[in-house]
Every structure is written in C-alpha cells, then in structure tokens.
Length: 57
Image 1: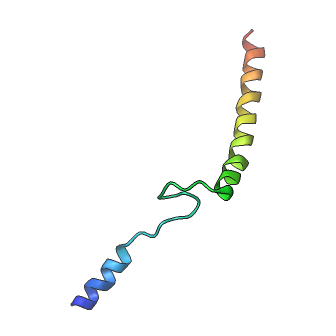
Image 2: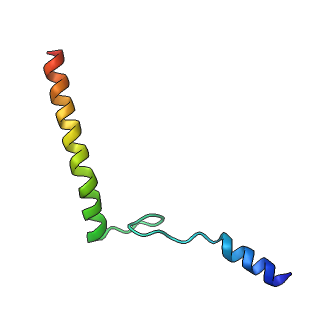
Image 3: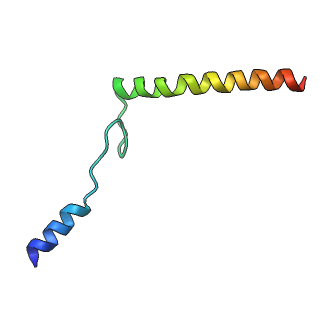
C-alpha cells in the first residue's frame, strides 16, 4: 500500500516548465522569445491603429 501511495504522490508532482513558466526567470533565451512574439504583435497593433485613424478621421 505504501508503494502505491508513493507512486501516486510522485505522479501528482507537477514539474516546473522552462522559459520562466512556473517561476520568475528571465534570461537571454526568454527575452529573445518574448521579442519574437512581442515585435509582430506591436507592429500589428500599430498598423491597425493607423488604419483606424485614417478611417475615422
């Protein structure tokens, strides 16, 4: 019974992710990943706002 409980407990442990998921860790790799995501999003928002400004003014 103790062995079964130990296996169940080991299965319930959630491993920590990488790239700062599950803990605060900001290194060069995670900064690069955020830039790869953030730059296109920022560009898209900028283009959308410029287009909306042209339409509504």
